[in-house]
Amino acid sequence: MSEQTLEKEVRTGRQWPKIFSFMSIRSWITAIVAVVFLAWAYFGASEVTLYYVDIALLAILSALALNFLMGNAGLVSVGTGTFQGVGAYMIVMTGFMLPDAPAWLTLPIALVLGALAAGVVGFLIGIPSLRLAGLYLLFATLALVEIGLYVFQEIDAQSNKLSGHRVAAPEVFGIKIISEQQWFIALLVLAAIAVWFIYNISSGDPGRILAAVKANQNAAAAMGIGVVSAKMRTFLTMSMLTGFAGAVSAYFVRSVGGEFYTFNLAVTFIAMGLVGGLGTVRGSVIGAFVISFLPYVVSMGLRSGMFGPATDYVSLHQAELQTILYGGLIVLFIFFFPGGVESLINRRWGKKQRKEQRKELADLVIGQGVLPKKEVVTDEQ
Image 1 (cartoon, one colour):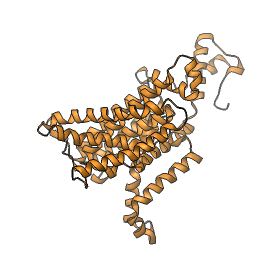
Image 2 (cartoon, helix red, strand yellow):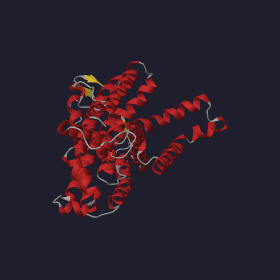
Image 3 (cartoon, helix red, strand yellow):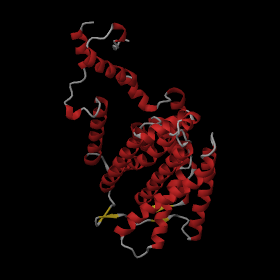
Image 4 (spheres, one colour):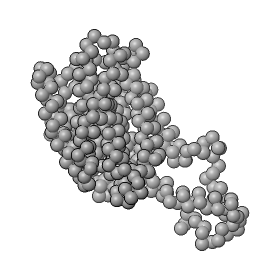
């Protein structure tokens, strides 16, 4: 292969201006699709569709936390519902403690307390379980779900709020967030911050430390990495993010009740991670939208008569069938698409190894001239 031909091949795909070089073409396409979809949702979608978009944006917070916990840290937890419940009930407790405080002051205090309370619960659960290898964290969080349900229902019974606690609409800069459009803006900002936060953790030193711990704990400890402390920090941070999401969801739903925070809620977020792709930020976002829109698709199918003679049965048992559908999706993706939707996207655009090889080839060409044939990497190879 001549020097001119090789240099031309290396320069293919590098025609972006320098101002755009910090993102790949695939990332730009993802960003453009997201912007177009969100603009359509805000300006052109119906109120019902926008409501489900808001639910998906809210779900991104907990989906990111659980996906990072399972995919990057290798820690399996089913306590998402309990951590969300702790954050939500702190909204109620803050209202009890500060009954006369203005809404603009109650909101940040309640959100911070919700995140901190969930972090404390996560710390207490993590102390004994994270020091042991295996699925002890799974068993501990499974027990936490039952304990949380009992505590939440006891709070409801003691306060005579068996039908749920009402939550006042949040107020930001003197504006009450009530409409779907207002919630869209607020949740979009929170989701963007959460995506930025998780992306920086996963691509920075904490992500590399967790990758080493997940690959081999003994080797990581031999390199001087504090295995238990790394897992504890991760579990604590993700618990706080989940509790914060639960507090926000309490304001969004305007109600808090113990029956919301069950094991099924954890299954929902596990399905989001598996459908989107474990260990990826984009997979968390995709999974949150896919799973959040499933009830909307089912309701549209019921209205159109898609289920035929089974329409009445599906309508009557929609909640139970929805849980079965989540379980079916989990099994489907585990066996046939273990990498989730993210793996399908990667398969379409090429593997990461090929990009790294081309980058190394470009660096060598610039520095040394023409390479030997055996070191040339082409698409056909």
